[in-house]
Length: 82
Image (cartoon, rainbow, N blue to C red; front, side, top):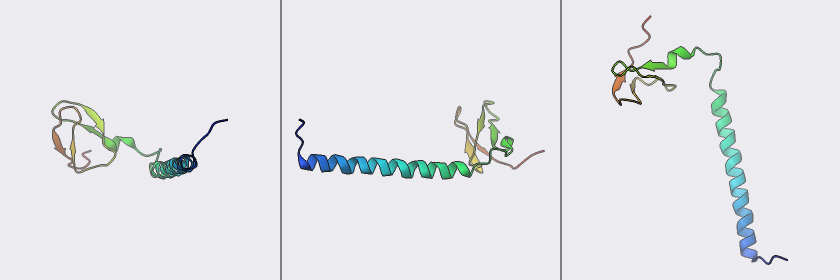
């Protein structure tokens, strides 16, 4: 039989409960954020192309000033040009 200290057993029990509830809350929060994204939306409004290096990236936050992930240059969103 395995002998275990009572304090160790209680500590392991509460650690397991903490991890379980943290994972449940994290997955719930993540699922609620996924519901905000419309799958059928026009994704071309999120695409950005760097005028300096030509890198094409996705900016889901639609920031006014955004940064290229390749050359790190800052660009300003001038709105939709059609």
